[in-house]
Figure 1 (cartoon, rainbow, N blue to C red):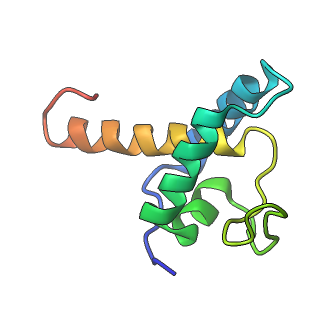
Figure 2: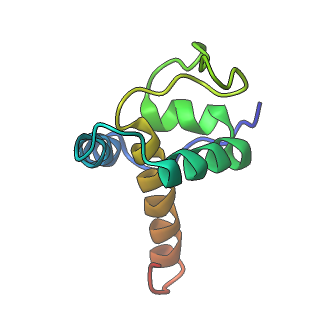
Length: 99
């Protein structure tokens, strides 16, 4: 498992989690684009990163895809938002424009 952890503050993570839940609540159906992006992030950044973003244990596995953790409503969106926030943070630190 990749040892990468988020660089975002707990306060920022709480904001992103609230935003992620709000995005997920817009529809009763799972967003296929969000599902694909979150799977890609889990592969690239690893579950250690996801644990640090979601601030919870991810040992429970998905029923359909056991290679991936079970994600609650809004958590896929939260992972995507956290990834973007980290890229924005890096761009700001480097003096560039955030994407």
